[in-house]
Image (cartoon, rainbow, N blue to C red; front, top):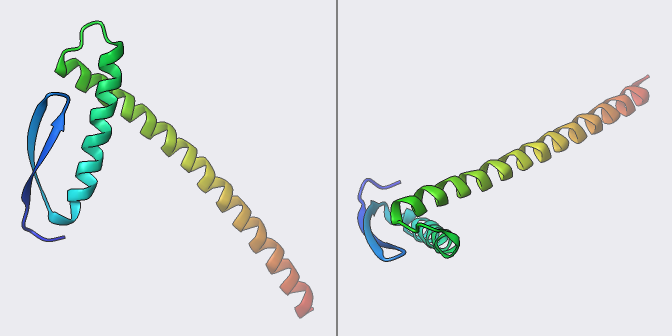
Length: 101
C-alpha cells in the first residue's frame, strides 16, 4: 500500500463527506459508501424519526448484523470443508498403508 492518500467525496443521503484514502482503496470505499447510502435510504423510508445520526446508527447495526451472520455462516462452511479434508486424508493414509503392507 502506498503512503500517499487522496480525498474522496462520499455522499450519504443529503450530506457529503471527504475521506482520505490510498488510491488503491478508492473503489472499495466508493462501493462501501454506496451500500451504506442505500441502507440508510431504506431505513429512512421506514423510520418515524429519520434524523441523519439515527439513520447512521441503525444502518451500522443492520450492516454489522449482516456481516456477523455471514461470518458465522462462512465459519460453519470452513469447518465442514476442514472435516471433509480430514476424512479424505484419513482414507488416503489408510489406502497408502494398505499398499505398503
